[in-house]
Length: 501
Image (cartoon, rainbow, N blue to C red; front, side, top):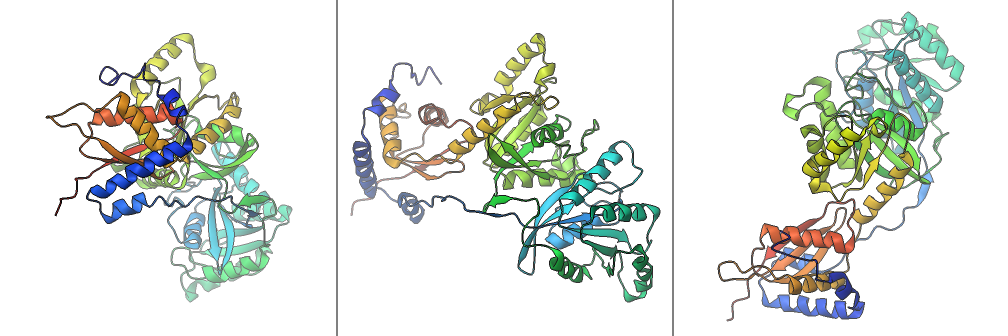
């Protein structure tokens, strides 16, 4: 490529700097007028209209109130969450303890917005990872405005349920009691003894079939305040959204905990501990970000099963909902096919990108030598992504993540003025014309950038541009306009001259 299109002596930046904005716009107008001699369709006309919707500044509003769902393991909390949010977002499997972290979802009932928090099962005498799950559930209650305590209506109140009630009494929060798995009026006799728990009227519901959930939500709305007790102010569109992705056990949850400054996510050495995406508001460099800690992608999708399969789907959905992806790679292990595939998922989703190399404090000189070779070999296609070396264990260099995210997002939203873009193309082609192929030399008639997030360019040409020449244009666009941290797309539209009548 460099032999075919040398650039060392083209002085492109200097020549572009000598072209004034007025001159660049005049050149572009002349090139655009010249397109009238070519066959154009309606889509071409829309591209050339040059009308863009630029996002204005987002006003801030108070955060919506928080409703937390708690209860012992396997009483159907996640099924109830799915019923309330009308989506299969929460992982549901007939195995206790599938939900391990507190997980937040935006929800709405009768025109009122609120935040729903799903939690892992609460157990008073839990040990190990189960103890950390219980701690998460209790923390969710602390931050909630109203709590829905779910128990199995057919089983009745167990000793664990009574321990949960004691915990809830200590918190002094409004609590609604939901007796789940009540599918018929014949089962109502199982509900009456629950009055003895002292939490007021029990609400019989069937999370699976939806019966009774409306009455439960109506009651919750009466207790929920207008805004969150601990939420503060949030932008209307919400904070910038970051998908934290990577293969299992590279330290995603540990990093999120370190960034948040609290034990927010259950961390365990067992790969795949995180199964639900966990939203966390994190402040970096004075700016608030919404992080999503996603389930580790353990296998190819068609090989995954059960909760792991759904977690895989949600990792993709987290990328789809995010604006920027932080791909975490563990430097103490060779870069794997999985790592490359996760990066490709982020690119395919069109997200801004930051590469974070975790466990940097464990790196010795020999491993560093081989790591750099692996990066050059396997990640050359994303050499434009900001690189942050971090330690999730100690928090080393976590402060560098904020500026990297800001840089990637700024370039993800960058728009090159049409005049400046065509001046760039004109100077580049003058210095490095497309090679003659079969006696013909395709020309670039006009260039435009129809969209951002990520930046997309369309070139109107008289013929097909060689893939190598398109890569050359893409590389020089990056060098000239600094698209650090964002994928960019260069498309062609080959157009023929109008036939003279």
